[in-house]
Amino acid sequence: MMVLDAAMQAIQILLVEDNGILNKVMACYLVGMGLQVTTARTVERAMYLLHNQCFDVLVTDMHLPDNCGIGLVRLLRDSSTPVVVMTAEDTVFFREQVRHAGAAVFLEKPFPLVSLKRILNRLLAGYRYFPSSP
Image (cartoon, rainbow, N blue to C red; front, side):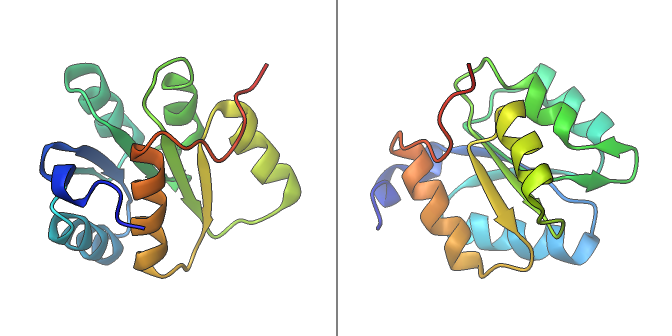
């Protein structure tokens, strides 16, 4: 589904991933989609960027060196910015934590990059994966 391919150039993505190789590979893939990508490797840097720039989507790992990425999800809970959470920790409890924190999507690592492309197209078209928390 390529809903927004023509409009992708104006889309701002914040990618938060501490693994240097994965950070670069994902950023290059997203740029190749025509997206504007800003990267961070820590929660502290991501918080700074979120307070000083506007992003259309946050894509974040959960296990970061300085803190858990769940704080980033909670920060954006009441905003219109959807959050995609990536992690290798796939338990029912963890998925529930992520959903209740306000994430739109949970992606279990490893995942094919085309899955992220499909998810971003759907999110940017207004589709929500998790229902809003009460």
